[in-house]
Length: 426
Image (tube, rainbow, N blue to C red; front, side, top):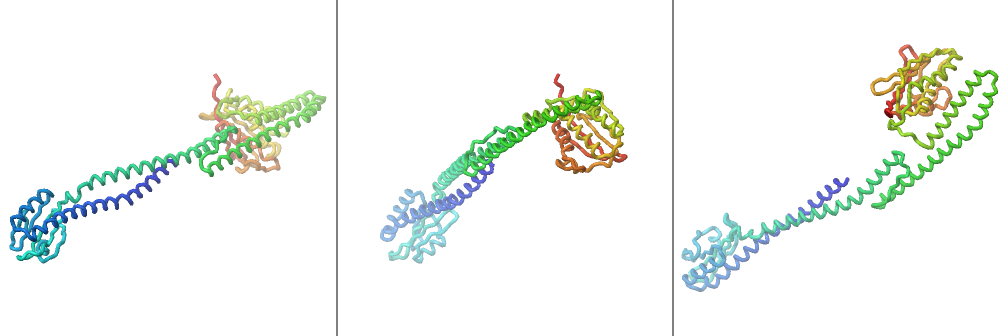
C-alpha cells in the first residue's frame, strides 16, 4: 500500500510538472528568440540616420564598426546595387524591403532582419542583418536544465511527503493486522494503540472492544464449565456410593470403573476449559495403550449386546500428538455411535496402524452406514447431541490430521482418524 501511494503521487507530480514546465520551457525559448531579434533590429535601425544622409564611405565604416561590435553580419544595399559591410546576396526579403517594407524572415542560418531606409535622392537603401541561431538560443539550454532540476526536486519532495503520509496510514494498519493475528493465536491480552486517521482509530477501538468481549465470554464459558463440574460431583459421589453397595463384587467394580472414567472425563473438561493444551506436537499419548484400554471397556457392553469385536493394534508404543484423554474421548464417541446407530449383534472392528508419517485409527461396522453430513457439529441421526463425530474431528485436527467418513466394501460405516505422530521426549 505504501509503494502504491508513492507511485500514485509520483505519477500525479510528474504530470503536474510536465503541464507547467513544458509550456514554460517553450516560452523561455520564444522569449530568447524575440530578445535576440529585438537587439538586432535596434542595431540595424541605429544605422538608418547614417545610411540616409552620409556618403558611402562613412556608411561603410559605420557598418563595419557595428558588425564588429555586434558579432553579426551587417550589410547595406545601396540603390545602385553596391553592397557595403558584410558580403551578401540580395535575398527575396531584401528585394521586398527595396520597395519600402521592413520585415524579418527565417533563413537556414537564423533570422534575417531587413530595414528599408528612404529619403536618399537615389532611391531606397536596405539594411540587412542576420541573427544566428546560436544567439537566438543563448541561455535556453541552461534555463531548461534549471527547470528540469527544479521539476525533479519537486517530484522528490512530493515523494518524501507522500511516503511520510503513507507511513502514518500503513503503520496503524500493520499494528491492527499484528494484533488480529495475535488474537487468532489465542493471545487474548493483545491490544492495539489507536493511532492514525480517525477511521483507523475507530477500527482500533472496535478491535480492542471485540478482544475484550471475547475474553469476557471465554472467562464466562470456563467458569460455567467449572461450575458444571461441581454440580456433577454430587451425583457422581452418590453413584459411587450406590455402586459400592452392590452385592455382586464384579458389578460393583464395573460400575465404579465407569464412575471413575466419568470423573476423569469431567476433570479433563475442566482442565481443558481453564487451560488450552498446545497443539504443536509437544503433547504425546500412546495410541496403542489408549485404544486397547477403551476397546476393553466397550467390550463388556459389546458382549452383552451380542457384538463381535475385531481389534487389530500395531505393536506399541504408538505416539500421537494428542492428549490421551482427548484420544479416549474421540474413540468413545466413535464406538458410542456404533452402539447407538446399529442394531444389537452388529459386529465392529477397530484397527490402529502407522502409515507413513501418520497414525491411522479406523472404526468400522457392518451397520447401515452414516452420511458425510454427520461430521457437522450438532448433526444427529438418532436424537443425540450430534457432537460425537465433531469431538473426533477436533481431536484429529489438533494433532495435525483429519477425520474421514466412508463405507466398507461389504456395507457398513468406516470412520478413519488420521493422527499426527508425537515427538519423542527423549
